[in-house]
Image (cartoon, rainbow, N blue to C red; front, side, top):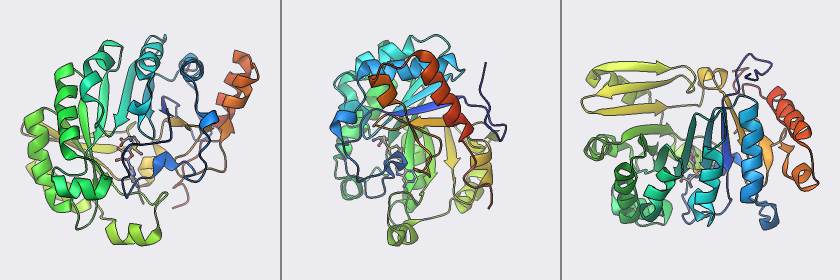
Length: 310
Ligand code: SAM
């Protein structure tokens, strides 16, 4: 059984924020659309609570789960969380998005515990630019990318968020780096969430012109409908995916996701915080599975394409 929302979109993916804090401070970070000002450590979900939510999700036909944050690898119990979710019946794929700075020492264990694939945020391979953008050390991530590939996480995708006049001239260097390491490069357009309008206007760069260049170099171009209609360019020995949600009605029309915020709320849309549903409080009050299933169904009913009127 798969749930379908009022717009006919199947619910196939769950994106769980495991924690709110991050060890980096990326200037562009949308923080998964969570309200940045609310920080309540007692509301962080325990390993058991996260696995229970994931179990309800898989019982409702959700087959793909992505762990995110904050930085998911700040969780001391990350291996337990991964193992618990990976063993759930009906789950086809467990993945993670991470800044990659902490992954090198545990990449093998993550894979052994059931993590299939990973997205590593890497906006640049220039050390100085990396430090300015994120506050972190580039070498830590590069080591992480190599360790993830070696551990057998597959694919390893490099999330390169494009910022005008900051890293947009580095795309072809990044394509070479992805090819050398055996990773896939994912180009991401800046979204105006949790950043100032000034920041967005200064750094937003549409990706259309790169798509034109990629099309010319590609051996094959693929269109993935249930991955927000993204295009995948098969260049010689490397793939490049392009994600551009803004002003792209297809992005919302083909959305198959629900989110769980780091404080345990079901979040039907990345762009909105006015229609979330608290699932953690009922869990802590001893709710039965049927009650949690009803909350998931309600959250699914609240899913609607954000761009539907554009
Ligand atoms: N700390 C982890 C990381 O760095 O991947 C997980 C959280 S981070 C918010 C998840 C993803 O969101 C990253 O791949 C990042 O590139 C993307 N992202 C962050 N801010 C964004 C923005 N303003 N627009 C589009 N994507 C963004």
